[in-house]
Image (cartoon, rainbow, N blue to C red):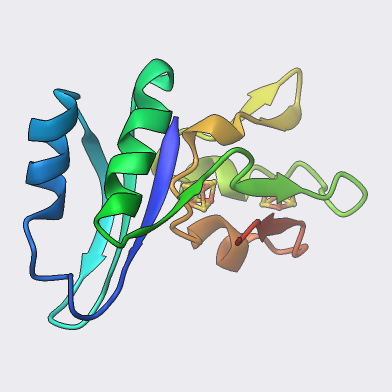
Length: 128
Ligand code: SF4
Ligand code: SF4
C-alpha cells in the first residue's frame, strides 16, 4: 500500500525514514520523493500488514501521513479511451482492457503527469 508523507520544516533534516525502518523492522520502498532544505513530500510503498505500524511510527515523529487508498480517479463520462494516460503513467496504473482504458489506482504515486496529459480532463488526484 502507498503512504504519502508530508514532512514539515523543522524535521525534514532528521533521518526519519532510516529511524522508522530500524524501529519497525520493515522494508520501505521509496516510490517518489521531493525533498529540499525546508520540506518534503514522499510516497512510500509498504506491505499491507505493516502499513499501520509504519504510519504510526512516522506520526510519532511529527510527519503528516496519508494512506493513498484511491489516489487517482477517472471520470468515465469524460474519458474517450484515447490511451494517452497509458503512455504517460510511469507506474502502469492504466491499461487497455478490450479497447477500454481501466485503472489500477493502487499503483499510483500521485506524480500528476496523467492529469496534465489527459486531453479530456477526465483524471483527478484525490488529495487529503
Ligand atoms: S488520457 Fe484521459 S481520455 Fe485518454 S484514456 Fe486516459 S483518462 Fe481517458
Ligand atoms: S498521477 Fe497519474 S501518471 Fe502519476 S502515477 Fe498516478 S496515475 Fe500514473
